[in-house]
Amino acid sequence: MMLSVRGLTVSYGPIGAVHGIDLEIGAGEIVALIGANGAGKTTTVKAIAGLLPFGGSVTLDGTPLRPGAAERNLRAGIALVPEGRGILGRMTVEENLLMGTYCRTDRRAAAADLAGMYDRFPILADRRAGLASLLSGGEQQMLAIARALLSRPRLLLLDEPSLGLAPKMASFVFELVASLRADGLTVLLVEQKARHTLKIADRAYLLELGRVVTSGPARALADDPVISQTFLGGRPLAAEAPSGG
Image (cartoon, rainbow, N blue to C red; front, side, top):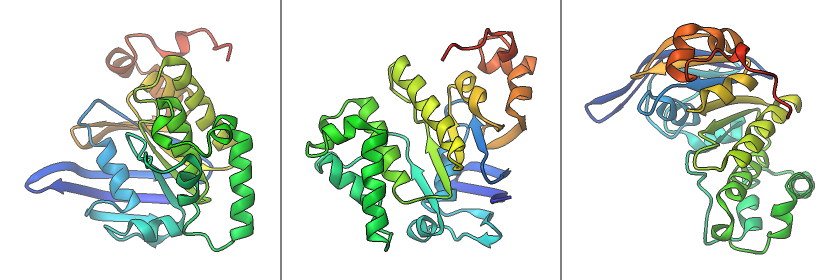
């Protein structure tokens, strides 16, 4: 497995937020963390990214990752798109994107990748000289994802990428995540929108109160009657008509 998490615990002072989570991600997979607010999803990805102290072990390709070592983890190939996007509003769109390349030494290739991001997200090319704060919510999410991709990650952590977006833009984000897997990228996706998430994920873990309560292939979880009743509005995913796009 590319990423292996064993017995992960995280506390905020005396308050335990994550209680012994185990999870694995294989190369080229989309693995989802689903669950309600307060389930521990964001805390888990922040710990993996190196932004929080933790107990237990996190290894990337067999190499242990240390708590609180975010820059080292980024250089190792882990990029996080945080909840709320984390864009730098007083900087231009292009300056934000260039922040995604600061750990890279291959400047020529980085410049080519930047041009590629403008091809992939034409709206960012149109607004490259404008302040990032002037972008819409959906455009800011594109910017945050593009910035993370410019670090050339092997593992992309996406924390609530559809949060606050209009339905059309949220659908675009889910389609984008699916296309990243087709490009060979490995993704850990945190989402409350379980129905959309399970459609594109390979496997999923359901978190509740800081613990994994069940896990397995995304399709199997989507068709589980208890999960569909709790998280999918009572309808198994398999009962839905295929999407037209």
